[in-house]
Length: 406
Image (tube, rainbow, N blue to C red; front, side, top):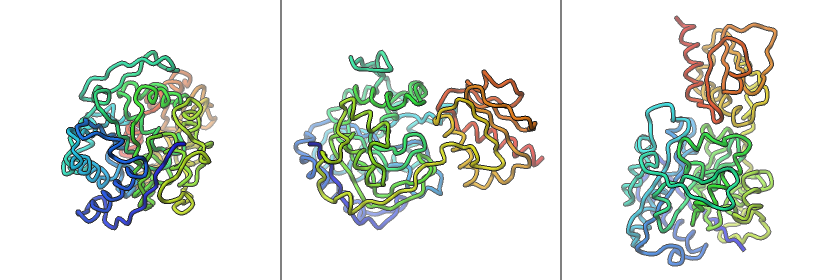
């Protein structure tokens, strides 16, 4: 039977400005978490080289209030605990966000700009950026999508791999937690591949070659609504942990009101033998789900059709991963208020064979390789297969807004 720990603590300070008071509270939560899933002596050796993977996408929008990235208090407390335990080398690594692949910004810069780098250093850890190190091709007989999977060398050389995701809702996958976090292990070029409805198989393939040994979920401040980038903060004060990444996600989903059967990644990983998603067969230690559960707002606006009156979206055979990038663009501009500056409507064409309206639009955007191939209209073309670069879409929309002001 898989074991999942739920520990609740009373952190009172903020991610941006905290003291040793919160660090000690989080450290105590981590100690209880390790004890609940077998004890640190069983899971980690004193001389180990440990690699920790947080949830680091890019520097988040201020409106998200700590609901996007792994909490620095958890990283600082975890690094400090492992250092005091006698771990020889503590590496905290992450890859380059696919949304940043078109601009000069790597994982190291994201670590520094987000403040997570300082938290890691204070705890005694060392930052590593996977876009700066070699990837090693790894074969496995059960791979479904790849002949081999490229894995960061530092993960393969580590004695223990600790996954530290943030618990939040997600526009494309329902929730993002332990399994979805493994997208960050792929190199940037591989992140782009299979970023469509085959995505659950992609995550399972990574688990086959780089399964986390321990999963420690940051539930101090969770994220609801339009995740993973524009979530609304939900303070929960939780740390959820397990050696079973599937059980971790099953329990975390239930904590925010989503059954495992609703999440394709979770149920597929269970079916493929990566872990257990049957809540009746998972031993919960510590707090019980019913005592900490809260029904989160889901990321229901991944489809951008009708999301914004000034942006008319005409879609053909588009998958939710294409849709979500356009929706994220609109959401960002709504939050910033820039969408209100549009003098004329924008028409967006996306997917295979998008329909062509009878009305003519001055501002036309044809987004993604399938639409560029099939749509014969003149307009701004933004190439790419899913995931499309929402950063580029925002910039293209803003150019229209700025030109309209001139």
